Image: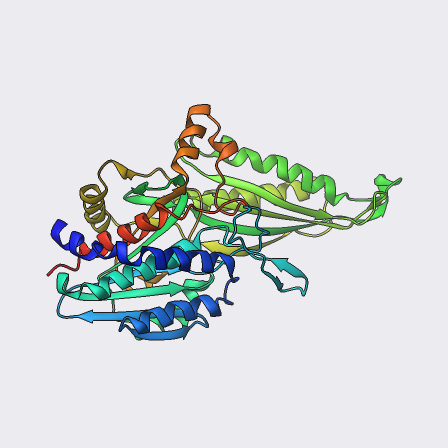
Length: 418
């Protein structure tokens, strides 16, 4: 195994500069979900040049490249491509200045604030190394570039467009994500890794009136305020302290004027859980609290509870995770870790589910190690370390890219031996 890894990774020095340029180019030209045409072309062109059998346009912008190299297992590695509607504030020379027309017609800034530019670059790097060292392995390598992860629909869109018939059925699916850990760090865990996520829109109804005559109204603003306060007790009072979950109210909208009591209010919230039982319990508690507060306020109409977006939990299968963890330990040594539970969410697991195969998913660090070490020393990680989706989040080029390319390659070679 170590000989195979050494043989394949020996060419990393030769492609490092190209990958750094690609990363900066992708960072400078981010694209929102289902609009990743430029990024997808970069991926498909790179794969074709390397001799991969490429199918593009899956679900609009999804791409797969298949490199068959004799008899052996089939390994699929996945990277997401989309960016976020965030105005970049990193000050980098390759920072994004992109703005696009949003769904409502207004201009909105776009930034790779979640590191998907790292993911694309690392998968292209891994694909290059695998193609350039075919004597070192046997089997089939499939590189998959997925659109629209941020909206939680990209994997499903590719599947609905026939992904499972357009790609050979893999024996395992691999994926990684850059996270706010020091660059060079690699972390994996068996079982629950990323949370399930449910975003809800709740509309509560009252009766409008003049602000000076509240006795004639049923005030939906008060109703919404009481609901927000009561929702905080779900995690603190209805779940065990050992059962992690998050309930966050991110948006409240009601009214147009200080002295007009409106007739409705809209609450938008997000839920994170790690298993089906907790998810069901939290969602039922939300529904119970909302209905009870509306009844207590004599709401003239039942509340409306709509699910906006849902993500499945990312639960790593034990056998492939153990195999990859052992490979990481052998290659990365002290930089290989067992990572903690993470509260973000992903839709990647829908892909192996569609094929009916196991998967494993891990994290790599992207923060300047010296900056991270200083924040640890000062106990200021929360204040000084930008996290994913922050306008100041931008993984350092190295050793982030080397680590990401190496991790994908090492994990892939854990299956594709001579």
